[in-house]
Length: 437
Figure (cartoon, rainbow, N blue to C red):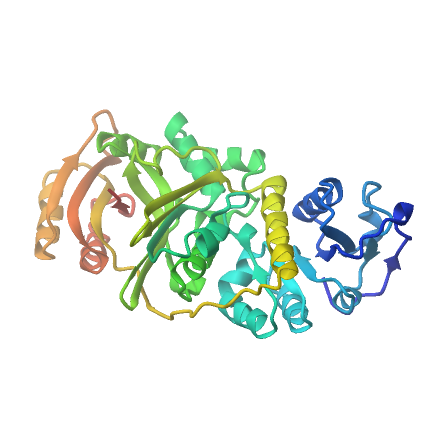
């Protein structure tokens, strides 16, 4: 969407002469799946404290709906929205450009903003929050992570009295659907991906989901809201789920575990340990029980201990509910004369050097001395073997087996993995997964 598009505006007088002068005026920019659901809630909820006055989108003539009240302005011109007397702008066009420009202009003009734009908040959240505070308005983004799960409002309000030091979550429904399907049906990764695409859970190019880009953007937002730390998505190591095989769930089960894509951030002094990637988690844990495309966020606090938030992480209606909830929160704050105060944001050192137990899965051409050679390499790097797992019934030319290691730092393990990568008997790269207990 461009801010210099042709001006096409349609306005009709309010029905029945309804007096909504006391209502908080709201403009909606973006009328896609979520935008349409937001408009429907605003129009049908009967909430007299909110008045939808503008809907802005490209090709607006094809977007108009009969259920929208006649007094709503349909427009393609962003400037007309930003120049109007609306108090709250809802940004739902997504992406960085022109969304960032629109949000900045709205805040600078004294309008509060509600957005579901995870990429925008992950990259520019601290700066935009400061801009909102300096202009005496609010920026809310509760729908940018976990859709309809109210985790961000809880972090910014309900848990603000605690001192959080850790956040971990299943933040990408596509990955969770694929991994839980491999687990339940023992099907190949490629088949689970095709099924997810057929059901609309994965895009044709699902790289952003599979390789962790989506989850690490959401982790950056959670770190901002809950840990008050600035974390750029690119500073977080992201490991792909593509290498996870059905046999890995067999071996994980022997360890009392399953496999999920976990996003985690732990604040320790001036260092933030952060990572996104597939991990072994206990089957009977909160993460292990999450199936299909649900999202789960766990927080750890100094005083309140652990909290969990579970629910649908995507979809038009759940996300729209989160957006409208933010709008209602802002409207209530405006009517009460309260303003959001931007918290001090820390800029910690970011590291992926977690200390944890490890799962190493190998595919090899069977021959004498394989385990002895691997053990020699691990011992040379001062790494202790915890267990060795090998299931029968596999072809000798592509034999999978697993070594688990006692807890060690990632930085200790990496040189050993580099040395193992050149071994002549390996038929696939070693799959290395953290084991979270």
